[in-house]
Length: 468
Image (cartoon, rainbow, N blue to C red; front, side, top):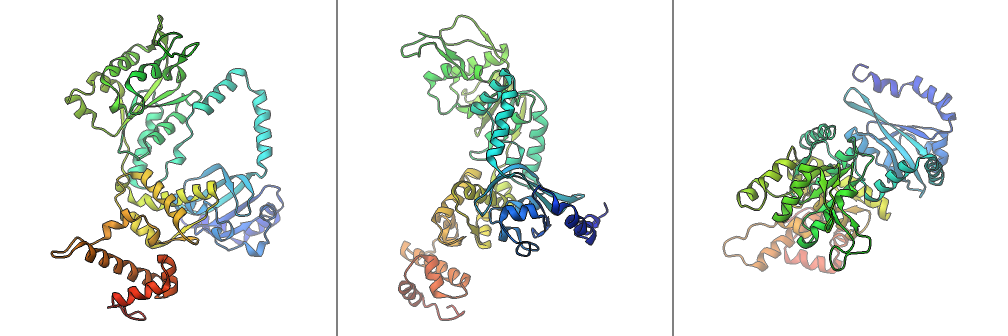
């Protein structure tokens, strides 16, 4: 289609006639949105499911009809969401599709569809399908559920050049079977990438096993990785124990924080990678394993090699392919998308629905996020829990983030003066936000109105829109 031809056809009279004469009678619930997120068409099945009248839905913004909808995010990113579990504002749950309709690269609308209205029916269907599986496939699926990877490329949220380029590189790596070393600061989502690589690789039907090398005591690491035989040492459980490498056989093992692996253990890991076999503690026979190794670190391994803390031969074994995951400060354009994503997840899990003011988006986008995505998620969760009403405002932002707005101490000024200057600034900005409504400002600041009046007098903040 030429530019805008698709859009004009999508909302033409012919399309509306086709929708009303054919689609409206189908027993499948679906709707069509325009690029701005307004519902342009919704069939009777969907209306009945929501318990709404047509005139209360058509041409309304989707979040005004269903406050939990993720369609604005789909329309913004152009990334489809297939078979997502969704809880509607009326409390009903369903499995849904959200599909961006495109004309070339331009998103011109959205198509939504309910795949399963009754999750109990879906569970029955899954159970019936399981009964038809072979014992081996059932074992694989059960093991994958217990030890498997949950995340795929759709879970890596962002449309910045940095993250798109990183995903492209990772997708290419997934098609190969070489070992991968993932670099990145703490909290950037290294395990998310590892799981997505596994889930799109030829090993996806086999286990994904995670090992945090920094969390296992040195004296236990060998038995954790390779297992042990019965009676191998005092306290060994009866029958022995299978190790992480055996659990991951034919699948992927993810060695997180590999830079913290003890030096003596590195030699034993190198032998496994070279020979393709492990030996349990107390065992006498080697056990063959076929495992892809994905490692991750936030440390400079080349520096550790120079310091004699990491083996160079192991480095070359694990670093066949190398992926650098960018920190959040290098992809700040993704921050609003990530905030929306975390708000949705929190709403689905807790039932707490919040919006965020534009000022808050702007402040959070300017912050450098040394803890990266993990820190952002924690901050969003804290703001959701601590904020009053349905909108998160500047005063709900954690103080350590706002602290960077405190002016540098002037010569001759003490702590008390600096605190008062910062307090005055917060009060002024809150008044502007409320159009100088003092009652509303006091409510946002969570202080009595009388106390606010005393502050206004103290700082000589005048009535109306005039400030000193």
